[in-house]
Image 1 (tube, rainbow, N blue to C red):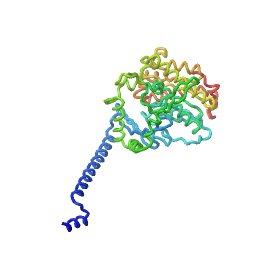
Image 2: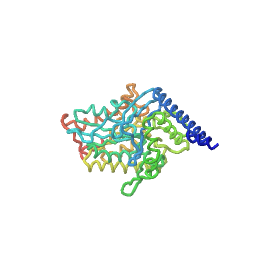
Image 3: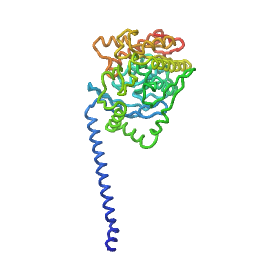
Image 4: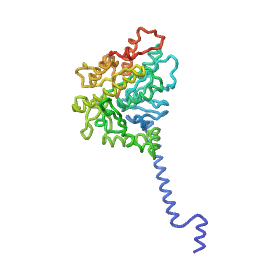
Length: 409
């Protein structure tokens, strides 16, 4: 018996325990191979079949503004009309071409700050409004920078402006206002809690960065690995995104037309959402939204003046309302237009250009701007810019004096 045991030991076999370990190792190996096989199969299928709503989850945590995009990754957009757009994220984390930090001599840099309408992942880069603007204003040496991330509030756009205007030496700040921006900066409406929120004070506002403590886990442990994989694997991104949607909305197969037009509605708990029409908000909530919006916009404008930067608001109309007269719209437009006029902030309204395009039979909205919508949006800004500079040499650098040129238009 002793001799038999010694033989087993010499051969690396310790009897029944060794057989159990081998069995466990075999099962784990098979399981891991199955997982890898499912992953590869899912990755291949999702890359070949254009399933609407499937994209790389290239969004990453940012303790300054809440979130951004991983540089040098790929953003994919597919919709129910079988549109397919593949865009690259630049080294700064935005869906735009790369811009060097040092401004080329003679260039006039215009920074467009906003949310998904500024990010504009729904069309090829060459057909975005900011690329059209730069191409059409070449004789003015204009360089357009698009600094937008989906889901951003007014405050987040303002914070991004503080981060990038001095870095890129931007000459003019353009805030692209979207109808859900006011709700996105109220925790009562936004509810996700993964961003900074403004808090009204007697002398303006301060910023609640409470999301940082709640999101510490995103900086450590396995989370960065999961985030990295989701930014590079369609299968993994789809899995994580569907789990998020399930947690937030319950079982929801696809976006509705109401979701796309920002005209709805309430969530499954009956709570107001940031896309609601202003008429559906309580008087107290509406008052808080307007007071908060006014405080952030005023500070942003004042800082631009102190830095001798141009400042303008480029308005994105609500799809269901923009063809109505302003006073008949269920939107934030009347408030914003009036506020800008009182503050001496340039307000650029593309409604006329967009209406003209729709009247010609082209659609300007489908899940954000269509190609025709981007062209109309750009046209409104270009017309305003050329009116501003009609007395200047077309070959000279464009100068925008915020103290003189901030008039309402």
